[in-house]
Length: 162
Image (cartoon, rainbow, N blue to C red; front, side):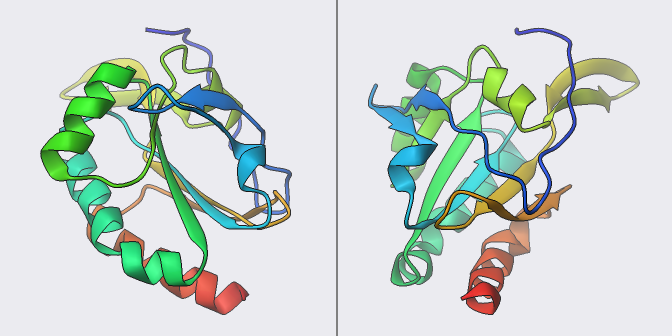
């Protein structure tokens, strides 16, 4: 899947790279479509795996807090639209899951990295979240996300920045 090229993560203060990706319903999303709002752009390795499921469900459960603050949540992984549709349906996820099957957006954001599991090395998504401000700049980046408290951290960061 994709290439083996890793890249540097986008830093806070940098313009958030725009993209065009399809969600679990086949609808097209561009980051630029959300100018004027805070955007949580979270990159995750794989649909319906334990950590990714807990993270997605935490965003679903924090929906009211995020919506009150005008925050849009967009999940991104290399899985395809059909996989995203099954995942969203199974866990009643009410936000777009974007299919980056070419991993080009993952590369542009620097989350396509060398990973290691059980002694095996491979290229994959490093769980990372970007908070993009209403003018399209990266306001904050979370690396090595701890999924259980992550949604609350984002709400607190938005409150601190607004």
